[in-house]
Image 1 (spheres, rainbow, N blue to C red):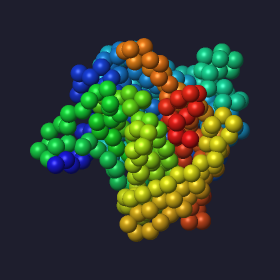
Image 2: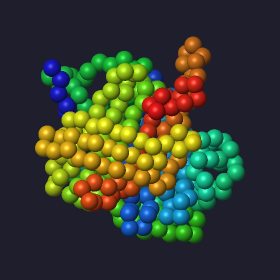
Image 3: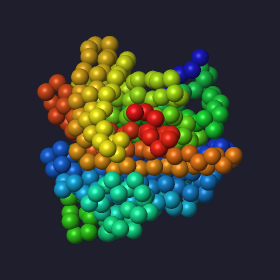
Image 4: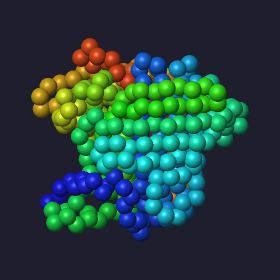
Amino acid sequence: MTKVRLLPQDEYMHPLEAAANFNESMYFNVFDRAHNLGGWFRLANRPNEGRGEMTCCIYLPDGRVGFMFKRPERRDNDAFDGGGMKFSVVEPFWELALTYRGKLCLLDNPQDMSDPSTAFRKNPSVEAAIDLNFMGISPMFGGEPVNDDGSQIQQKAEEGFARGHYEQHMRGRGTIRIGTEIYPIDGLGLRDHSWGPRFWQSIYWYRWLPMAFDENFAMMVSIVCRNAGEMHAGGMVLRDGQYVMIRDAKISAGYDENHCQTTLDVKVRTDEREYHVTGKVKSLIPLRNRRQTPDGESLVTRITEGMTEYVCDGKTGYGLSEFLDQIVDDKPVGM
């Protein structure tokens, strides 16, 4: 028997495991519909590989995207603090804070990031300062699956994506300064926290759609395909302060000439009812992760990150559409 465990101390750092690909990461997004402004932020520690990962992505009202990725040196798992970004837990399950001091590459055409070295070379980088405070608007969703006696479940590290993982819808407020431009932001979003062995190539493809319409109505819809034929749909709907579990979901997408999502049609079923959500991608940046296997095979994962306008039940909200695909024969497998 297994159960899912989530404790207040899970908001903090977890013991370092022996797996070479051990990862602990935290992520936030926030979207201010009134100002057509949004962003997402991620820190990861991979101390057994001697490095961390820092990603900062800002969708500006005029269509530009400010982006930065770094791999700072990291040989411990003591804090989320690297590459100019820092996350702090103010009160577990309720309030967290985020700061960033560093440069952002300003992209007039975010599609440039499909070739990162060229994108960073041809586009200007400017100093940025970001200060955000996040407050929970929902319960917690997820945790760490453990054995019935509370002991840890043994995993194959080479197949790992996360030992534990939880999410929460939030309100984010603060300021974003990029060069001489200052943007106040007050919006809704979602955060997550994961720990355990991770390879981005452990999942064949997934579709992850976090969205929020107001403080009483939000969703996270996901479809995960572990291999070419095994899919799992899930997520949750926030209604009046409580999460209702998603039992089934179907996501259809329209694509552009770069195989990036442009429109979404989402059907969601809970025990209480069905939801129909449509989405229009407002701004998108393509990212990638590359890894070489011990036998020399080169693996490429593409992750497209779209700031998306969603409509459901007559309400308009904002959120993200994140599509992860392994690339086979130069095409994303999930299409």
